[in-house]
Amino acid sequence: MNNFENGMIGNLPAQINKEIPNPDGNAENIVKLIKEKGRVIGYQLSSGEKVSKEKGIQMAKEGKIKGVAVAENKGNEYLRTLPDASEENNLSNLSSI
Image (cartoon, rainbow, N blue to C red; front, side, top):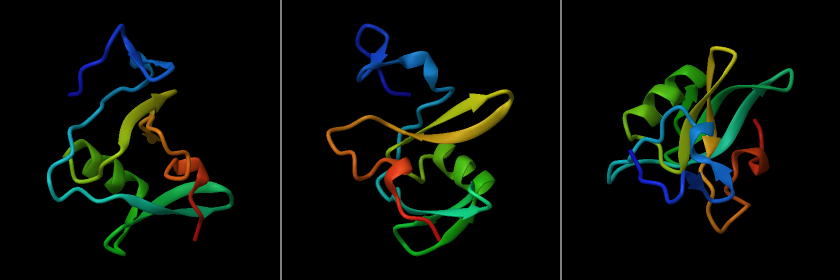
């Protein structure tokens, strides 16, 4: 798990995320969202592999996807972008397939 200064991640409270995995040296990026009826159902990774939302969450927990944290809302886990200097790599800014 990453350390936080003053309980913050950028401008957001650290507790907003359920888990912030440490990516391994071969971790991939999410490059596209797979959506159905406007809802994220999966991710395309930098290798070109397409994975379900559930598998993406598991891969992130295992350190196989970088730049994301696992958050939870009403008992449902989802991935959130970790704050950095770039907005173009935010999940909400990625194109969909």
